[in-house]
Amino acid sequence: MSIILNNAKFVTAAHAPSQWMQDYGYEVAFAGRSNSGKSTALNAIVGHKRLAITSKTPGRTQQIVFFQIDSERRLIDLPGYGYAKVPAKVQEHWASVIEQYLATRSSLQAMIMTMDIRHPLKPLDSQLLNWCIESSVDVHILLTKADKLSKSKQANAKRTVESEFKGTDGVTLQVFSGRTGLGVDQARERVISLLTNETTG
Image (spheres, rainbow, N blue to C red):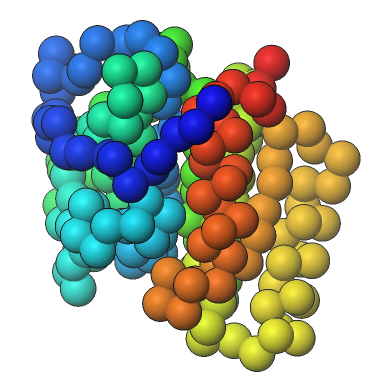
């Protein structure tokens, strides 16, 4: 099946579950800490410069954003988490909405998680990863901003994260840079395979 991610179009930005798109077909969600390069990664993978809005102010995206690819497939941009300057009540709202989405969305096929390669596996990252593992949701980790490190340091960081999930089914990872294009083709192929349900059980 041919899926053209470049066809992705913004549909809605939802503050509340009542505003979510109908739960059918296949969804792949993007999640990550604020300032981990999530929006940049999403834009690079779909081949749009401004599909997902990037901001120099972490924590700006406070909604679940739905992008339609075709009649059956969507990409989801979840709010960035872990930004300390966001008010506690807002953080609690984000956490509640994300938790509800992850717990109830039957069309969710997998999670693409972005982690700054220089600071991977922060506590909130590990919490989300463990939830996905326990819920049998596949996770593909993008170690973003890889252009900030030498190739040897990239490899070391990748090995360190891999060691945390050695032998765990459904967790894969790669190095990635939206700025230089490193790993973009690999990530795109992974997203397409997840949206065609080729790697989920």
